[in-house]
Length: 272
Image (cartoon, rainbow, N blue to C red; front, side, top):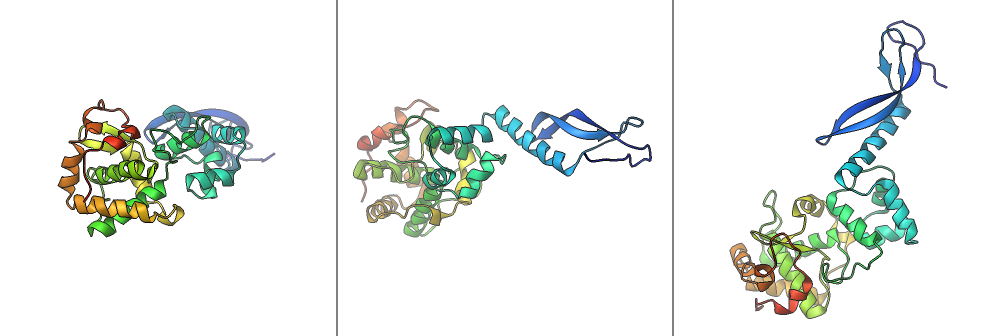
């Protein structure tokens, strides 16, 4: 047992559990800290070990309060499906280090939490919402970079809310389902006032920009051909924006709802 003396010269300190309220990312988190307390002056001091435990407790409490999977839940669900950390990393297109960090206390982003839930759920991820493909953040970036090459300009920009980029991505995924039977990215899209938009785009944007496209499956010749045709049909941002607003898939889907991929066969845009 560690012996700790009061720095004010009051002798040995006593080990106690102290409840603390710690603000973290805008949320007050209640934690129990194992600390040493001076019985005379009340001064408290933690240890390196207790600091590590506090950080993990804060992370787990934050995830619980914000509806994110906890490290224990991720591990339990993974083991229930009978897959290893390596297996989960492979299907999610992330490094195994990320899986290990999430299971031991690191906080995953909202988009990564959604991906974890899809891959760890009992139901298959190949459905009408993801276009018969598991979500791949690195592949979204790969598609965006392919558009950059085809258009001669970047579609991903800082702080633009993906207003135009999402329309290019949506058409790419929709035409891929229509022509190839499978989306390019596995992304889900929703009806928002400014047209079809990546679901939870605010959380996704940073992950997409920081992704490594080399971790994603390369685009096929057919997929690249679709991207080139979309770029030729809509060479300007406003053109793809206006076209998306004329699509029955967006018009007939209630605001805030997912736009299912069964609309792919009813896309009205015609590629050049």
